[in-house]
Amino acid sequence: MALSEYARREFEHILKIVIVGAGEVGYSVAKNLSSDGHDIVIIEDNSERADYAESSLDVMVVRGNGVRPSVLAKAGVTLENNEVSLLIACTNKDEVNLMACWAAKKMGVPHVIARAVGLEFTDTEDWARSLGIDMLVSPERSVAKEIEELLEVRSAIHANEIAGGRAGIYVFRVAQESPLVGLSLLEMRKNNPHLIMLVVCIKRGETSMVPRAVEKLQAGDICYTICYRSTVLEAERLFQPKRAKKLKKVFIVGAGKIGFQTALRLLSHIRGLDLRIIDADRAKCEKLAEELPNATMLCADGSDTEFLRMEGIADADGYVAATDHDETNLMLSVLAKTLGASKSIAVVRRSTYLEMTNHIPVDAIVNRNQTLAEVITRSVRYPGSSRALTVMEEIGAEAVEVTVSAASEAAEKNLIELRLPEGTIIGLLERDNEMFIPTGHTVLRAGDKIVIFGTAAVINDAMRPFGEEKL
Image (tube, rainbow, N blue to C red):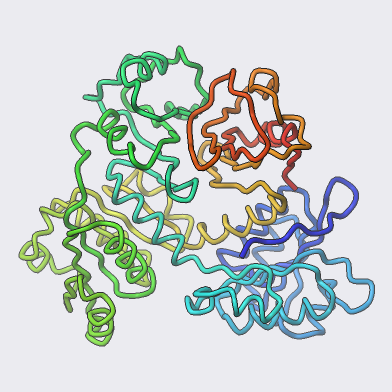
């Protein structure tokens, strides 16, 4: 359920926001929104987490249980003179999150967001609607979607679908043997006229740039691309010739929520996939065997090297470690890579582990808490018709989808006339259910959906001609 547009406070759109829970998710959301200049109050009943948030963030911290009226009142959630614009409940307890949002709505907070640990709460919108919750989110489905993208496009460092899954933002490293080495982006497009793909950012060493057409690619460059889903494997073959091939065999260790959701997506979208799910808990294996008859359930220890060899780990195109323990997932992913798996992915909850791909042989690390924090942050930052597709903190950039309105300055103008700030690119345009990459002479029409890619410093200026602005 999309968050409705809510009344903005005066003085530079500053909102008073109450966040219940200062764990990994709540802390990240508070940090992001505080840096945007909003007035943040955190409610936390764990003294250690409360002390850490108070000492490291520019926020007010109220100690106590976020469902108690007296605690909510200390944070500013009151029946009289209520100035709170938004309450976000993101503890790891559904009953606390749901109750805090329900109480806040009853006391006049116009908009509330709740984290849902139980997937059943987000199966339909009925629960959120009946409780008056504007947005009820759970990370498992988003994480499963990201894992599927990473497995399907095997050499992608990061993948995020856009335009309803018909296109995506894919991050590739230019291999030493890539035919793109030494070519300019203009030459790349001339040599591959049927490939609908645009390189919107290049990270070279510690430097990131929105490239010009004459920029030449080098081995080791990390390229952020916007590409049609139907042609992404063709793009992958250009960046990573040795790694591009169809997904045939995948292992998932961990029969929990993320493992199940990932398996469900893979089996639904990839015909004939040999999918093997490993878990030492027999009850979980038996349950998933009934729900996923096309998967092979293996009740075993996922770290047993002889067992993995017997099951053909060396022939695996993909491997996902999705147990409940971060360290176990990292260790298992390294083990799978050592035993010959083509691509290994570890699911973690702590953001501190994200940089470990630079130090250990793991292809990708997916952080479920960061995924959820980004979803919540984007919902607050983009309350109107625009929506952030992804926030790439590692290069300080964002991709935002905007619908051109008839009343906006951009309607009936070509891209050259808009004079968008340096550091932004219009990466994709969708019109009448057709998508294409626009040129400077493309005239925008009311109803067009465009994807704007830009650095965090200029994305707001780039959105203004379309009548949109970040909070």
